[in-house]
Image (cartoon, rainbow, N blue to C red; front, side, top):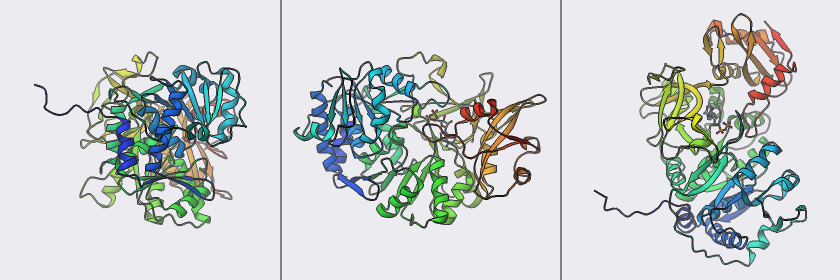
Length: 540
Ligand code: ADP
């Protein structure tokens, strides 16, 4: 029997219409250095219509890909909404990819148009001759003089292009399963692979972002979206903000701790999202530079494990709760969120909040061991995490991806355990686990413990070959300027916090942990530095 319900497709144009009318007074606020530029959602709606007309004029009539090579700003929000709404496919390009990776993803996705911020022309411009399908470059603002395009590519200014266009657009009705946006993984563990989101997956994911037990983004929030729009869709915040009526504070290129502190003090966001390294940087900055960040009611942290010391510092120094979340480009990206169960308090509550969080109804999870057996969800047994659901990728664009799936479940490459009540604790990425004498050592646990030392700014742990144990952990540690703490003292500090056989005997003091294009610890590079003999290792 069929239902008697209407069959209305879920679409980005619906979010655009809703946000720009019902929530038309909300704003996207772009930080411009010392000040900000404000555009109401009503105006965003009108500018989206103009952009869609302009793109039609450039020959974007079907599901052509329109790339964006941009910071988080109001024009990028317009691209997020207009491109999928007109039936084309938004392709967010990671501005920090290596040049050959950038060329690969643009050509692989067959981008027809790319919108670029003027400040990013030096990165994109030199690659233009290598792009095989790009016909038009649109430079945001009014000045295109910084870009000389090769033959076959026309350069336009964003403002001139949309200036004469109508601010009303007849958004087409689309099948909700069609492609809306695509994002290539950042390639931490291999070549970038394209994940293609549908209108339906984005819609359902946006609802999860707004749910009280999701990220709890709410009407009237001002959400500081530090997590880049070119990385995992800025964790879904732009679409969710239009759905629920939250304003957005976009940091543009001002991502250092000082401007972030300034923009928080000036604009007073209530909600913010970023990877742990951003928050660690801000905490350090605030030690010597006073700034009022008390407007924040929630700080969402994910992308890599947040050290408990960072959660405590935010809460105890500033009264701001940190919400830990897990996800991947492939999971749209919201997978699990560590909202504490009702009625739990004190240390038990903290224990829940340290985890990577609880899976929502839309994300089914299971664990498998090395032999492919299911592992019980008993909060102890460890296995590789697999997930499935309506906003989880079922394949990668244009490549054979069978080896990344197990009977329809996405292999996450993450290893951990799950409690009976659905809370995930990741112990590692499968590639980062240290296999010592037949036992597994979690590099994340060691890092968190070392980073709990007051003199430690950053610590990354990798496995290095060992004749007796196969592998042993090496801790690469960044100490505060002027600190005289010795590695022996650090090892003593760990005693009692980790099992004795896990105590690392190999230590290297470094200036900075290398980071990936999206600010995560880059252990591949750290391993390379070790192999090349660039790390001075103290063996205790
Ligand atoms: P990449 O795989 O290139 O780093 P993603 O941003 O998609 O790109 O990264 C997803 C991965 O990030 C996850 O598979 C997991 O290993 C890691 N990750 C995300 N959130 C967390 C978290 N809260 N704790 C630990 N690891 C996390």
